[in-house]
Length: 188
Image 1 (cartoon, rainbow, N blue to C red):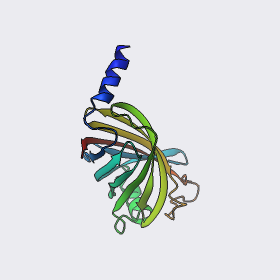
Image 2: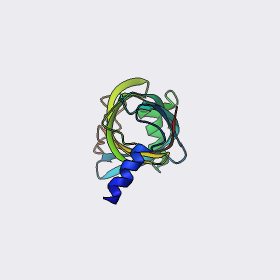
Image 3: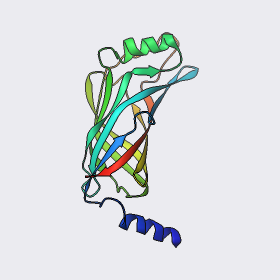
Image 4: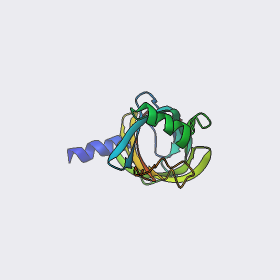
């Protein structure tokens, strides 16, 4: 009962109303992007750096705009030879230094405080092409602090990127990406 009252009070006295535009500024240093790529006999694991991000959204309409930028050149797996191949052949990060996600809509109810689940739709610009994506996201709000967690597959080969499979070493055609974005929320 007490928990229900606390949650209700949080919704009533939330710093911004549900029908106001809000801005989420991403803390790039605190945010992480990791990936896993299954291969014959092992799984390649690595990370990328978030460059920047700012999103404007309205809870009442599900509208969202802005972008999250990831530094494609920052990708690393801990193996210099493999990383060089990833940058030169797969990502071609010298020509395509940024991976950009631009959201267009939110499906699901976003709570003013606590935990919410939603699907964010938009486009991902990677390797010089735009692709429509729908990303399931778990969002936690505490005061003006937000943590958004997402895990999804990118079909990089189907999206026109190089398949690094050679001889008996086969590599999956999809890479699993996990993103944790930390940010600060403000109302307009």
